[in-house]
Image 1 (cartoon, rainbow, N blue to C red):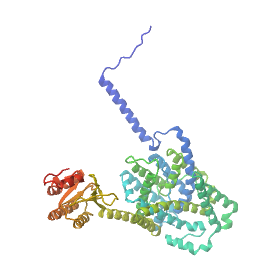
Image 2 (image 1 turned 90 degrees about the vertical axis):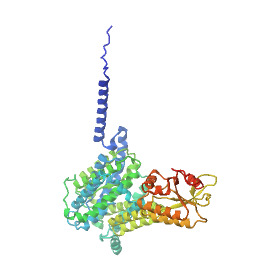
Image 3 (image 1 turned 60 degrees about the horizontal axis):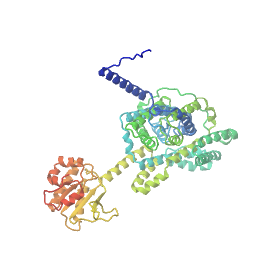
Image 4 (image 1 turned 60 degrees about the vertical axis):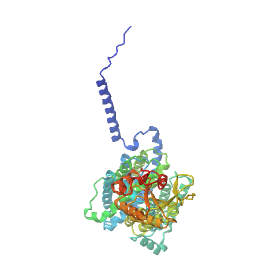
Length: 593
């Protein structure tokens, strides 16, 4: 019988441990290499997702194809450049971004801003608008990459939801004003929203009925398709039917319907855009505004997706991805890109599981731009104008505006101010005003914080605000006060005077004031001085100041500001009930926290 030979086991623990450590190091290196080479949204990809992603890509193409061409027209560019922008944005975000459903491309929110910026410095009409747009895309992309790399994504928080709602609605109004002449078949003109509307009204009698009919037909098809089934590509159906109608009835030559004309397709020529450094100072407001809007809209779009991640740094990486999309768009000679809420919503409602759906859509759009642009020369401008009207309607969130009005009239006024300023003055001014108003409102709230006088629930040790609808009782001679804010230089005097008024207005003489610090995150030097003045004033009246439920941060501020030594550490308590109980004890027998 053959005897099995076994390799001698390595009995050296150090050698075995070294091999184990080496194996773990190789595994860690492979994981790092995998994270480096595999885009975030493709990690853990399964073959079974291919069909779902293909369907999601087709659904996205049906919406993106007409909307991207319309957005390019909104920016004053040839429609094919919108397709290039979509390809650039989709490719870069799929390779860098972290959200599996976010769609990036030419966006109607920033397109009018870019067009206005180019026109404001005299670059429009010079025969090379695309070069100026590409330069803006380069600058905007560089700013977004810098913002994401420096982890400045928190800048999006400077705009509240009501203000963003107002800005988007204002942009929607501006888009409608820009497209009224197109859908009515009238010559455009005017530099402001009011000016454009006035020109349309003055020439209303020259409306082209065929153009208006096409636009109305597009709106009907899109609306019906959406109500029947959101997956029906209503916009694409309207595009095909409008092109067919123009060719069949010779609407362009016989009835004066404006069409896109010859579309020079093919693959984009990649090159560094012409620089306009001499105009950079005048273009900087447009660059900063567009970048800020991209940050805010990307944040809002990411929050609304079911694939949103809460991992730290993901949003900053998403900003780098959107910025890289604009840089790629600049090399392709087209406009800056942004996260697209409508296109993202399409992917959200589709079975798509990863960014492969965006890549599939980008490949299909690139094929159309390269070899299938001939039929687009018969595309009526009214169809693209109607498409933009649909997008504008999506930007005007009536329900959300109603909800804001119902919640808080002041916040609704902020939204309304942003809406009116963007629509009638300009988005740069609207965004700047919105930021200032948002910060002013936040400062106003912090400077005049809400407060409450607390009462005890009968038979318990619970102290609650007296105005919440529950029955409370007061302990004679004691005032318990709660302020819902940090104590800082903006509200210190207000809180001191407010407490003085409550003491003066008490029904009977007080022997103690208990400051409930549970909602107080910190105290600055000015707040500390106001609290010291309050303690001195109360002491002169024979009233002691007690502090309950102070956090370790507030305790630190009281101690290092020497206020704790003045009022005494025995006047700090872990609960309001303990402070009230201590008010009846002899001095020196308090309940230090």
